[in-house]
Length: 378
Length: 248
Image (cartoon, rainbow over all chains, first blue to last red):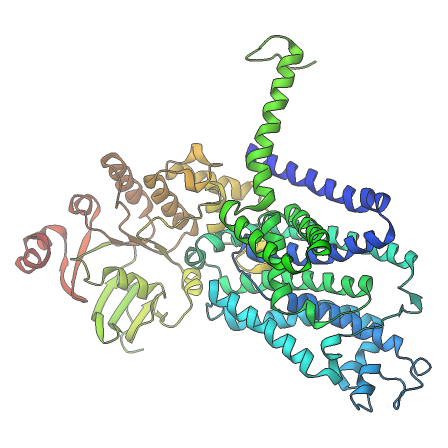
């Protein structure tokens, strides 16, 4: 492997270690549980950004509908929690006790069939990953096998985001409608609303995010990762090297969606509800912006980008709520025009050479004299 | 099959029309095992379209294309590649964001499905094979260079190398010396003469000097049909060919 590639690998490892240190040690020590829980919420978006690095940054598939997969994961988790919160004892004032409150308000008298399996936690956990992956597979198979790509694919995913929102809002007896699924309380009897539970869930979220990054790293450093870059570069050539391009695109799109869905499930657990406002077009595009700002070719960059943009959003919208969307749009345009490789690009192109220069100057300063070919250190 | 042949590749009655315009019209073309065939012809004669048809990039409107006596019309591009037909494009078509080594590694005919690619293991044998090919294509000292930093001629060679490592039985080259310097052309001719061992090669070329240096048999296309076919001397003497092509 070339020196540059080895260097890049080391750099990524350092970046990964710093992220782990930041979210697992520094932030929990520095912040109170309210702020930490907020960071935990941001980190759930980082799952989506990691997925976008895979399918957008490396493969060139821009999906403007990742909120759908985030939401599906979140809803699968919320359905289990809601059923647990809707025990007959908790809902005895309803006209049909034992079903979620919003169903009762919508004159449903019995649990819909697709809700029934969500009484089981193992089923719900599997569904968190499988349901979004299957949706991604169907969409991917329909599009990529027909060689729909680029802008057209982006528009289709956006349409999917719109369809999902309308579906969820329209069928409120089955989905909780625009309010979403709220008032989630316990996970197998363990109250998730306490500070202690929030701490634990925050760390679970961190570990899953770091795990997702490692999984993504593994995929990208295999030959499959290089094929993805090749597809981004010259799709036709890949076909004539004997690969079925569609299969590879479907795989990476499903993987990105499954990772986004894990984020969604962690969102539900940490924030305590799930609603269509995290599924639609706007959140989906916001998630693309997180990845773009951080750097769509860098897993570490995408996580940092997500944290920074969300922190800015919170800080900014506390003072100027109505201006935030404009700021966000401006930020995206600025990044797309000036820094197409995001913060990670700025770091490797500008900051790193500067540090290297400082470093070598320092060493020369210590030696006192300029030695063109320094002797190897003892 | 009535007319089972010994030909490696047989195109019979192949027609393709784009909105009524017949780019290739009732074309018959037979390629033998181990043959080097050069296709020449004026612009718009349908040369590139013929290659597109063989490799599955364009679908035939009617007619049959048989490879080793098996119909390949209607197969997907990657399936045709797997059968043993390789294609080089007119403009260098390589993966610019990957290194020379990685370009060739991807082109090895192994681990071509998702699982195979995920569990790919870069064995010493693979490294050795890639090195072998880079020596043939004059890029042995550039293994770790990003392909985008190569010169135009080197990119053309890299693409030929990518085909070589695929080890196809039929190799199709679309203008392999376009945009090359004189010395690069000579080297490419040498390279082509080396790689035609054990396989059939179909070359599209405009450069007549280059054609003379490599050609065994020449097919002249004109308006989607075969105008003449034969060895180089016969073609150059043919008055029809002179009129539509060489005379200009």
